[in-house]
Amino acid sequence: MAMARRRALALVSQLLQRRVLPAPRFLSSAAGGALDRLNSPPFARPAAPRNPAPPSPWDRLGGQKRTMFIQTQSTPNPQSLMFHPGKPVMEVGSSDFPNARTAMTSPLAKALFAIEGVTRVFFGSDFVTVTKSDETSWDYLKPEVFAAIMDFYSSGQPLFLDSNTAAAMDTAIHEDDSEIVAMIKELLETRIRPAVQDDGGDIEYRGFEPETGIVKLKMQGACSGCPSSSVTLKSGIENMLMHYVPEVKGVEQEFDGDEEAELAGQME
Image (cartoon, one colour):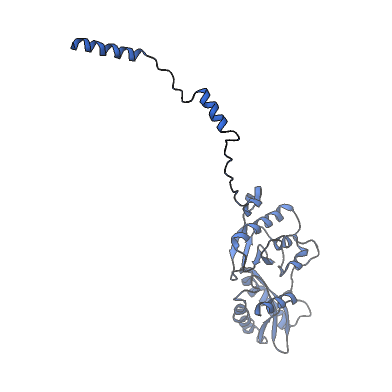
């Protein structure tokens, strides 16, 4: 009995080893056709709409994003930022654009004012200072400014449409200048202006009144409207001029018509 059982088990084992199992078929052709019908209308479900990511300002740079390396530098004015394109901007002097109307003579300044939130533009020797409104974030504004500067330098346009537009030469000493005025201009050009330009701005000489000893100056760029501009004007510039030129009794800041009206509106 036991011998017969062992022979039966051995026979079953041999049959199993010789049997070739067919390849597994997960779906029959009929089942595949049914699935195809389910994936086609009217049974197919429409794909869930994907919300496209909002376009980034960086996309505007396109292939130009690697053609220039623009560095930024902060200024004492939190609303102003210096942009260094890595090449000269103004060969001589500086140029200030307090509003969009004054920027019509420069393609670069006009392009920067076309960016929403830009309120002032200033050109220095190797930098561009951009001043923004309080409501605008630098996170949005910086890529836009980068794109405008890159577009300008790749276009080959001149900085000024009028080739006869002269840079500010307010500190140039003339033959009819008195000794006092010449000394004031020399100090402004050699001692004061470089320090002010390092902060993204400039200072313009507007005149000297011998009767009162008052020097008239105009702050430009980041220094205009800066919270610390009055301190710089009085504690820094005024003290230096009074120290080296005893005839100077004080320094006053001058504003253009548009700037004076804007300042009055801010005070109200």
